Image 1: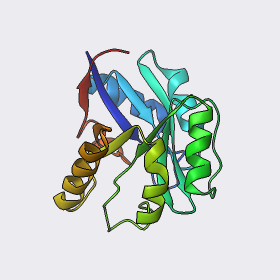
Image 2: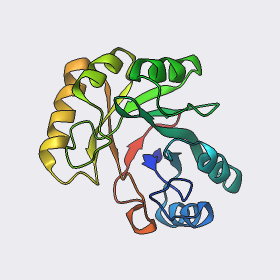
Image 3: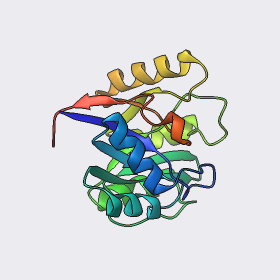
Image 4: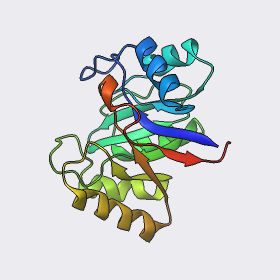
Length: 177
């Protein structure tokens, strides 16, 4: 069984100070054995974490589109920021990646995907974060859960860790892949 967090940031994101080595040490201490590193607009941190550990590291990126953030998982190359939501979704799929919609209804963050962009990427979506530990209001998580169920998409719970103490605050147990 994998103890998995699909949304973690390192110091390669401008809003995180967590070094790749400290992140790995924390994951090992907590028993997380599958993590997605999803730094903002870069896969460099994910590649560095993957180099440092034997645990499963999914190469991810939280990508700022012209309509808000989406996450690409299982990426082979970085996707540039600023593309349209559809262009970003297509770029993720061209790499054989999965598209995850992070914190879709959190109205505190300015980077949340817009309603029109959400409709644009839903046909490409694989996963919706139905519990993001950094969401201030549970109503955002409830709306995300309803959306995932309506569209038959995989539902995920994530820490969205930006600092060391947030790592492991939320994770999912899932079968190995």
